[in-house]
Image (cartoon, rainbow, N blue to C red):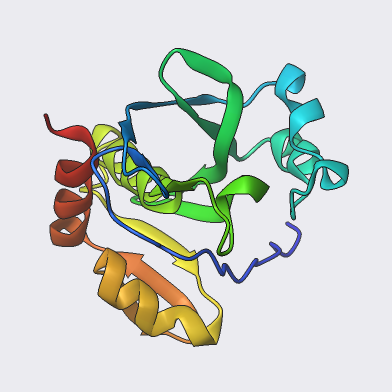
Length: 175
């Protein structure tokens, strides 16, 4: 069995919203999260400003890759996330907002929170009690503790437990 590559995530949770929110107008847009397909890959290349190699991520047999889009606008990907099902939790190897949803000039707020909340909801659906884990860059450990309610387990490992997962799922998926 080969050694698994660990990505130390550095996504910024800019705002926990009910959906995603236009950064300028405050308008909110309902979202959908579906599987990334090979057809989608032409939109999410490094040439188009994406940081990670999502084609490679999609080819891993042990992962599922999801895309976040606005309802009724499935052609514009707002963010991506890969998930790996473990024995009793979900591990999040990668998460990334679209290039236009990063930095000071971002168009939409709430993309990372929306994706993490989806991972928590999927964890509940799989019978894992909402547990999600990921590895964080050192400088963001406190940020994830504060914004996501994640627990710093040690080293770079972060865990979202049942209580934190319920709050995130309720924020994004309850009407």
